[in-house]
Image (cartoon, rainbow, N blue to C red):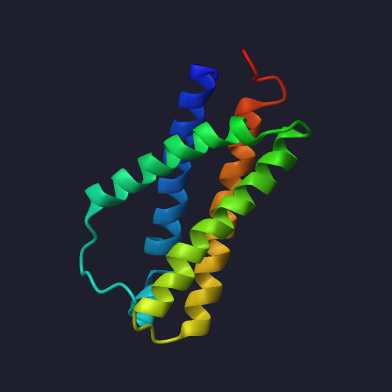
Length: 138
């Protein structure tokens, strides 16, 4: 594995995730999330979020080159990202909705599913482009 591309992919994941998550949850849809009332903690525990994001970054930066079989880096990255986004949504969206009270289940499911597919679709493309076509042994 190329250490430089691995680190770049992981750092890109962290930066993009913070930017997308913060703007989505705290700016564009903050009032809607407040209305949904699914988040019961007044102030999030930021260090736990950072640990989660860094862990995801390291795993995805490792997985992409292990699963890449050739083809357009952007297209393969998008497929990878959407697959990971669907996996993450199954845990963070559907399982949480099954465990928590939410004022509008439909709104929660649609909003968060779109968020995860958007976030991971974009991140998949970025990771695919970072690794490119010829990352084996380089």
